[in-house]
Image 1 (spheres, one colour):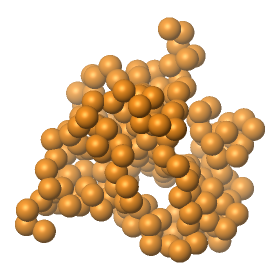
Image 2 (spheres, rainbow, N blue to C red):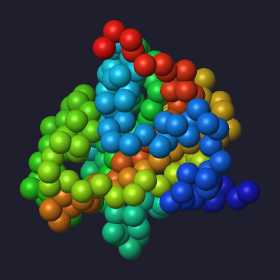
Image 3 (cartoon, rainbow, N blue to C red):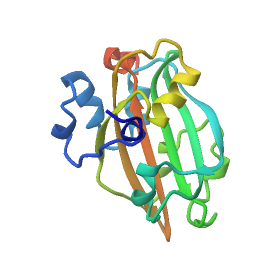
Length: 189
């Protein structure tokens, strides 16, 4: 396989397109807020912000957010941790052309979950989930590997979803890390 093809993911509109194992498939298909589900599966949930700044979107994100080619975006990357263990690497992009009125909370999230704002704002509409297998060479996997040790699985499973608010779009991509499959509902809630 050529290295250029590793830089893109093939996104599928149906979960069967990625042939994910059952334990991962269950997480990929989470309806509603992934954050809420992770909170329910841990005693201590935390959003660890890795980076939030201006950048260029990835080639496989441009079309999804309505750009003809990769361009300037505001991007945010976080690790979602359950009981201290990283379980999801999340990457969000907002086209630079979007205004603060489109996404008023985005720049002030800090270590708060993006899901805590998206699912409770009546102006936000959620698109369909798309699914992919992410392999070594894909920029998101390389970014996750830069902050995490032991990421040596050959394939990781991801989902992404486009959100709209006013005239703005926002694309959230979540890469599920192997420890997510070991989470069990927290019985103390």
